[in-house]
Image (cartoon, rainbow, N blue to C red; front, side, top):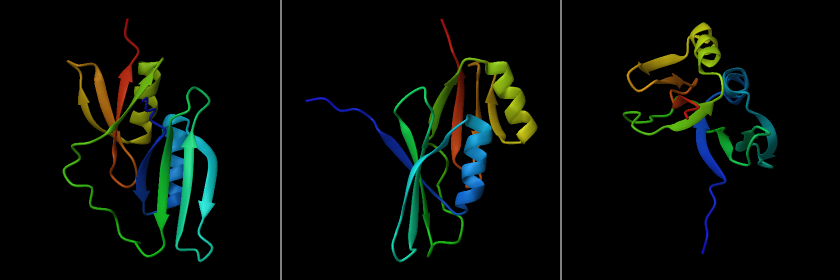
Length: 123
């Protein structure tokens, strides 16, 4: 029996703002979306051409407040081929929320407060 990861869901309070953030910060664009007939939810899958893994952004009409994401002890990690350029971009965007220079990593925070780890390619 084999399993393959296909997506991770994040609930978001402002879908357009989140889509803009993920495209600007990580180059992730919309692949497809599902909208409930009654308008109660919209699910957008975002990703890139480099792999099949997707993020699922879910907007719920009846949940306009920010989500309580606890103590931010979970995160999704992204490896980049140009760590310095990525760091510069995220610094300009003002979304870096934690850096660990001794480990050579940092984290950015999306509009809803989810932490995303940025890791350089390593030999």
